Amino acid sequence: MRLAVDLGSGAISTGHTAAAISPDGKRVVFSVRRSDGRTQLATRLLIQDKTMPLSGTEGSSDLFFSPDGQWVGFFADGKLKKVPVLGGAPVPLCDAPTSRGATWGEDGSIVFAPGITGGLWMVRDSGGTPQKVTEPESVKQRTHRWPHFLPGGQALLFTAHVAAFGFDGAEIDVLDWKTRQWRTVQRGGSDGRYLASGHLAYVRQGSLYAARFELSRREVIGTPVPVLEDVATDGVTGGGPFDASTDLSGTLVYLSGKARDPNRPLFWLDAAGNTQPLLPLAAYYQGPRLSPDGRLLAVSAGGTTAADLYVWDIQRATRSQLTHNAQSNQYPVWAPDGKHLIFSSHTNLLFTMWWIRADGAGEPTRLLEGPDALAPGSLSPDGRRLAYVHTGTDSGRDLWTMPLDLSDPDKPRTGKPEIFLQTPKAEDGPMFSPDGRWIAYESNDAGEREVYVRPFPGPGGRWLISNGGGRMPRWSHDGRRLFYATESGRLMVVDCQARGDSLIAGSPSPWGGSQSVSGAAFDATYDVALDGKRVVAMTSDESDMPKGNLHVTFLLNFFDELKRRVP
Image 1 (tube, helix red, strand yellow):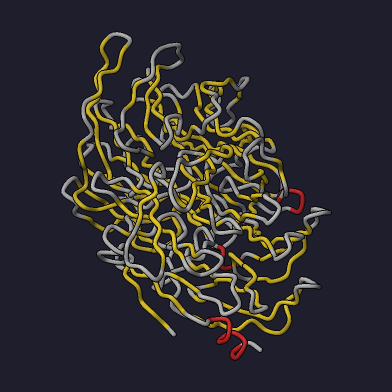
Image 2 (image 1 turned 90 degrees about the vertical axis):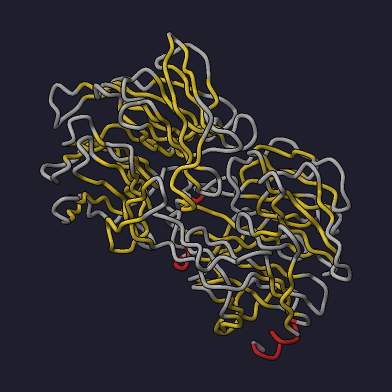
């Protein structure tokens, strides 16, 4: 039996979960948007039409139930939390800067993925210090995410991939909980989980696939079969917007729609929301950056497992490819001379920042290399200092700077890296102001991500720029305005004025009409033109998003159907 259900006023899909269903199939939990624009969790019994909000769960995403159905786990404010399903105060369990799924074991273990890259971690459901469970780097993978315990808690399924995007080409692995060793059970697909019907279910290219799964041997039997072809999967993150009860009949709930296509063209966007094609070829673009004279655009464009760096001549409408090495080449940053670029690459177990000529001549120069993720943010106006993000195993995402000697502009020499801002929270996107006096950045120091400004090199105060969430800061060319994007992708602009050693910031104002820019894990998906009257952006495509209240689809007695179609 197939039912399309309206979850009520304000119901929305957040993160990678449309709705989570309790193990006994009697209750769903989902997100709602309040009148103040913030989101929070709400719960509803399926035999009732009344929805009960869960206070204290603002900004939550990626929901999951405890095995007994009495608690709901979620991510919010840079932490992993839990809340009683009947209401009560949420309980923080540990830090989790970014969410890529979690699962709650019968022994009280919660395994979760706290980042875009890296492995799985475990924390007790009473809270505490997380322990590392997997290291994808040990097998030359980049990310482990979307964990799901198998019955009995002796093993779990998870998604593994050699890149941080393009998950139709990922694999589903099974981990032995005692030995902490894992092996592949299904190639091609993501977000695999075991259903009580005896099947492995996972998503790929907008479809839900199922295959017989031998639990005792932890193996797939036979050929996977597509059983649903209207699942709104997310090829960028690999998340599957579906959940199933664990009772014998089985109720499946999922978000129907088209699979999210990560490929988009790049547009010019003006303050009124008008768009004009700039780079009409659709691709998975990351980090567009305009050259200092506005004539060139550097951008990373990728496929399933790799991304390369390109430079687009805006006036001549020609494109040149700078890298051809099948790595993840990302985060382009222009040097002040407009003739050189800095970018980051990742291959095998190393992250490297490079210096390269924008015309592609010569060989790139290695600036910095190590096992931790490195993401260049911006160069100071004189080109002598690089601000970048360093992701440490213990410290998380922090802001660093590194001196550069550009006496020979084709062969720069580096100085000793220095910490600019290191906190227990996550900092991202450091952007030097045009006069070099300030660095704008984003941080979840106060819970949700906000944009701040600090003086460089410091010490000094800290000024909050955004209001109600902010990401991806970008200065106007004259330094008088600071752009940023809200969590929903709407652009905002703030007037800024230096007064002595202080920064005076005005109130945020909407910019770009009703258009939204696509979100990104760490890097901005837009850049501001020289005149400040337009931006280059990969705009969000909302044509396949549900209008009005969120509708989800319930399939009752789904396990019987699986046994018939996938015997």
